[in-house]
Length: 346
Ligand code: ATP
Ligand code: MG
Image (cartoon, rainbow, N blue to C red):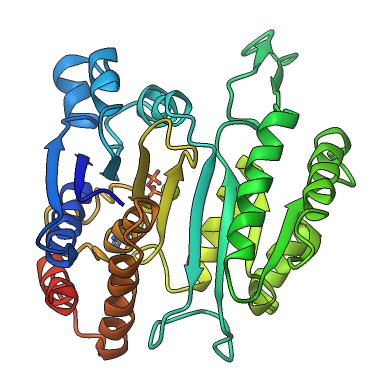
């Protein structure tokens, strides 16, 4: 564990600015005095694109590599054509830094609204593959715009790519008390990719006899997310399935204001990036209404990734305690940040 953190901060657009300020407030409050925190802000996102036409220039990509980790608020605005910032900035970073583990914990905190009857215990983490599947831009369109148009979007799955994320998920499952890992795929229909995933999963499982394993088709998994979420501990799945089921997971665990995520390169070859699952929320930007909790929980994931386990746990306990005392009275972004910073300080 290094005694300094050199953090890149990309506040981004809309409420990204507001929630990142609270994340940094809590980070400063939780770090021991002898840990030196250096931050450098990067102006990337919709405003930058409008001003200069740039999404992520190479010089900034190179500069970002020098940091220990990246904290991102949110990127995107309705004024920017769809795909420009997603492909030109977010996916570019994910591929350049080989963020092959997209980590998304789902926990139902006390006193938090859930649409699920009977308040089941929910505490699982989805390990979503981050660099393959249908996200690689392989495919194309023939006879575009005609009644005979044919569009393909190829899902790429390599033995290398699948094995490394499956291994990461087994290690994470083994480190948790319940030690259970569920593979989610659709291998009855997507047979080629499905077999690679299932065979790889079974092969690695042999090295982890203490981890209980399970397999679910993705459609069945969505049913269990609602009817029996307590059956999940760690889930490993491909890029697209992971995208969809983690939104469902956020919905059953109190919503988008609480969902944290990490885009992780577990090898440490490049900095990992932590961000709330939600977007820039232009409808509430600038009003001090955004809930910064998802960003603050993302800071906890960042700290855990850098080896600051005690500090990460302190943030999670503070969030849990704070939520337990929320009585439905609306609090400002700043007030929630102050309350959590107060709880973790010490
Ligand atoms: P993106 O395409 O960037 O994922 P999106 O269209 O999915 O964005 P969000 O920006 O995530 O949308 O917002 C979805 C809804 O959730 C909006 O009504 C927004 O106001 C609300 N919302 C998002 N984040 C928060 C937050 N931190 N606190 C409160 N409300 C939020
Ligand atoms: Mg969204």
